Amino acid sequence: MKDQTVPGFPAPAIGAFLVGLAVLAGAALDAGASNAARRSPLRRFDFSLARMGTTFNIVLYHAGEEEASKAAMAAFSRVERLEAIFSDFREDSENRRLCRFGAGMPTAVSPELFFVLQNSLRFSELSGGAFDVTIGPVVRAWREARRAGKAPDPARLAEARKSTGSQNVILDSEQRTVHLLMPNMRLDFGGIAKGYAADEALRVLKSRGIRMALVDGGGDISIGSAPPGQAGWRIEVKNGVGDPGERVSLVLHDRGVATSGDSFQFLDSGGARYSHIVDPANGVALRNSPGVTVVARDAMTADALATALSVAPVDQGMSIVESVDGASAAVVTRGANGAEWQVSPGFPPLVRRRESLQSAAPGHAVHD
Image 1 (spheres, rainbow, N blue to C red):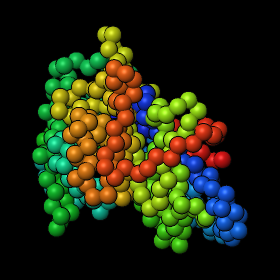
Image 2: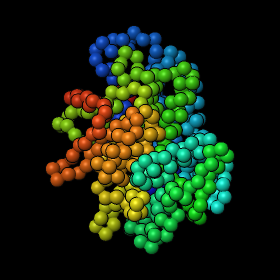
Image 3: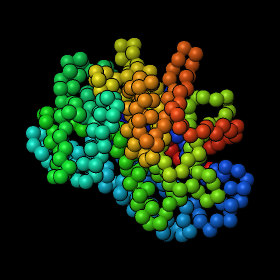
């Protein structure tokens, strides 16, 4: 699953073709929009803070600096609270406590953990198991393998897989309890929690009257209303598609966006390169995983679908996305003739530009 082989909540891996999203938050779409933005009493503010093993970036428009700063800090506090719930790395997280003590008996959990776990099981069923929040024991085996520099022993993987399977998680919505049926289960929210956290951070900003805002959680992006005088936030898709010097982007508002791919997190062993992305069906890390961009109604949905599409065959993955209201996707695979680009119906129009844009780490906001 996406981003699940590094402790905690690592920054999203970036595919060799499709990679991350760069938020071109301040770029006006045309001269008229630029003039309108200059007349606006709203000012743009940018904030960044390390959370969930990556950097969370908040860009917002507000009239006052003090109020903008207070709102951003409240949003970051919400993300910190969620990290304390979902982290697989922090031994004191609610997730880790549940996995240590919750096997064999129903355990009451927080509303946040129950909600995200409930949605995780829904995405698991929807994707035929391509998304699997119970993959933690297998991810841990591959994490150890990366440290050792060699692929996991097959017997080690087989043993880890005994403690996986979404059918081994029973939820009681009335009592808000989780029952883990197998010993040594380990829930890994790396493929969904950052998107949820970005949505929650944006919700905090909206509760304070700030709707023109964007939250980027290491490439899982929750997008609010469009900036002043603009049609939307311009999100650059770094995909290797297009002519040299051409920038391809999406213009979006009130949506969630997520990417998944494989470039920096991998294991070379025995002449084979293994992705950080693990296939729940067999417990083996993928090779030549695709680059995926998903647009959905919220970042949590986009995050989970991007994870599923990294594992599922492209045609199946597109069918999964099309079954989710408001969702669409673009997938780049390595073909015989280079990058092959496929999009689902409803994927937003691509804006192609020839211009020089300030570079940034993939999946992070470009402040130009």
